[in-house]
Length: 222
Image 1 (cartoon, one colour):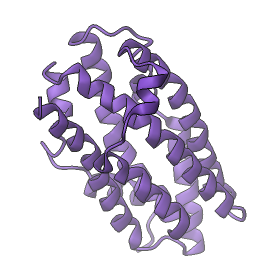
Image 2 (image 1 turned 60 degrees about the vertical axis):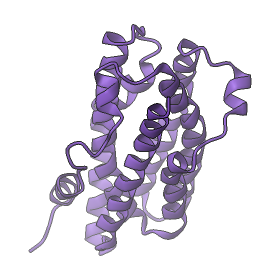
Image 3 (image 1 turned 180 degrees about the vertical axis):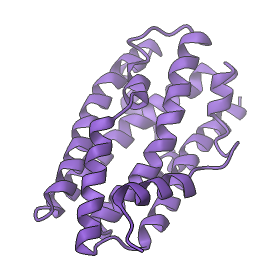
C-alpha cells in the first residue's frame, strides 16, 4: 500500500511521542517548583546545543545538493537556529547571566547527548529519514516550549521578551511543515525513506528527555 508523506509524518509523530510523565522537569516548571538556577542551566546548555544543531543542519543541506526539497527544509532549520540563539540572549539577561558565567559554564553530558546524536545523523543518516525523525521530535519540543513560555510568565514573572525563545518554538510552523511534507514526498517517490527513520526518531526523543531529566536531577540536588 502506497503511503503519502502526510501519513508517514503523522505516524512518526504518533508512534514516537514520549510517554506521559517521561519529562520530569517541565511539569515542575509549569507548577513553579523548579529553581531559577535550573532555568539558568537550561539557557547555558542551549548556548552549546544551538550552534551545534545549526552546523548539523547546514551539513545536511550540503548533503542534499541533488534533493532541493530536503535542502530547503534543513536550510530553514539552520536559519531558525540563528533566530533561537538571538532570542536566547533575552532569556539569559532575564536570568542575570553575563558573558563570563555563560563562557565558564561546564555543559553536562546528559544535556549534550541530543546535539551529539544530531551531528551523528548529519554525517551518517539518509537525510529524508532525518526529516521524519526531527519532525516527530519537534512535535514534543514545541509542546514543552509552549508550557515553558506560559509558566515563565505566570509562575516566574518573566516578560514577553524573555520568553521569546520559547514562543518561537511554540508558534505554529506551517511553512516548515509544508517543507517537511515536500521533502518526505520526494523521498518516498525516490525510494529513499527507510525503516531506520523511526529508530533515529526514537533515539532523538530519548536524548531529548535526557536533556530535560538531567536538568531535573540538578534541581533535585539543591
